[in-house]
Length: 468
Image (cartoon, rainbow, N blue to C red; front, side, top):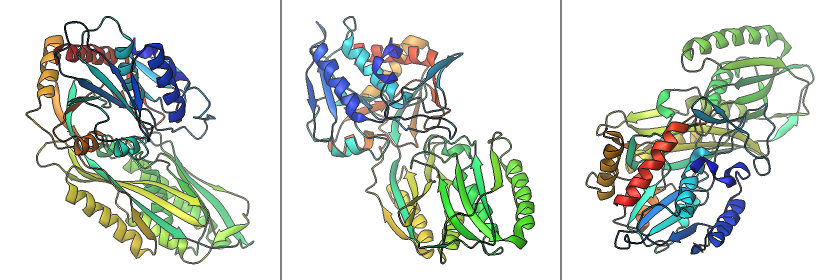
């Protein structure tokens, strides 16, 4: 039933279209709807007969998705439908992200709102905007927008696991100004590409040690830049702050006399990378190809400053939690390198379940780019969500899961950022859990949703509604 939500096949990054659908949905089902200035929407449903005295439950998910595609996939996320297909027990998309994060949460809420045979107390379904691009909706949510004191966040990715805490995060952005100079004619111009990496979620997948295309690209150029009198022409890598970059490329130039030495260096480099990432990145591809002479090169010391900073910038797990075994405590993601106007903009994101550690790693990243003559700024950041082992809704979720499936679900905190921390800041005392069906490859074109897990997730949600 959840998989039949008809909006998910024709919208993607545009919150406007989803909000329009939600308004139409509420009107069709004669349900009260309210919308705030940021675009967050709340649709309410009265309790079923005999359940009026049960507590009000807030079900929450976000409208947006990470729009990533393979370089050889032609797709306009604002216009083209996601091409879904079933592979065994998984729902996948052809060459793009699937949007199960957080489309499946929205679909579950809509199924609850549309149902006429479920038992539940008063329900408020909250749909927030722009979670993936900075938690905008959660930041802007007004106090009193919803009335429930218990919230079910439907934005987790592991069935049989209940999350009661998450990391906080902050973005750090570095900008390198540059001037263009005419490209010298008597030089060897070439393009280096790193592609076919797994990528993934910079919170949920960071502990796996997957390759970072920006780091790999920078590693090669840092090693050869000064020694071969290199000029940087163009560079591009990664896309979103919360996705581990899968692809990166750069165009550069060297004197003709270094041409063969460069190719030899690349052969050695490829062999080294294939050896280092053999088990985690079996499909990785690194290439060096000659290109036509461009019109310009980037002048001055910008190129070497950039590659020194990218080489030195940390990426990956910084520390593991001492309180919850197996939980990443602090990490950082070297997310994207983009040329915009007359600047090269490097975007990074830091996460930690400890506020002071979050700012410490952000300052570490800042210091490296500051030494490389970049202009560095930080985003506002967002708070973490401290676990509450005495949570009543957690106890209800555990018992209902045990009753359904005969096993005790794992109680965990997650290194990824959830909107729950911001909700708790505005609604002190809010009792919350986060749960959802199993997904893999989130924030990458490898994203997939496990069909049997969706059925178990749905039955668990229905049981919580009946028993909370």
